[in-house]
Image: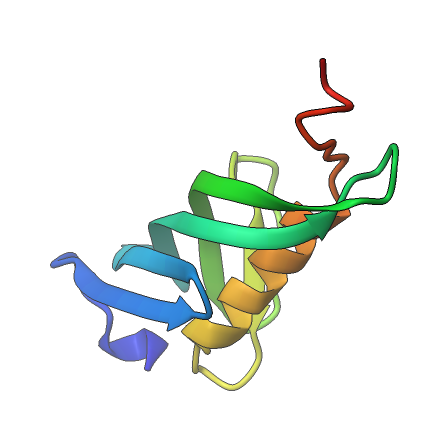
Length: 114
């Protein structure tokens, strides 16, 4: 699939529970494909201070490269790079990874952030 991505942006939208991952893929250079997207919705999370569950509103912009194969960094790439070893990209898996990154960050409920 990565080899089919051109300079014309390829739009995508994936929904998981109450979260939408929407954006596009665009050829950048060599084996690099640019992914620009936003993650919007809500996520249930435990407060890192009091452990009470609360609803976390998501409004995140995501931008990184996807490389077709092993990425060899020459120091000129400013964005993160995700490697695709089979020439395909699983947008749903990328969303799951981004959600896990958000969950691993420090979050506190409204009562604890006052």
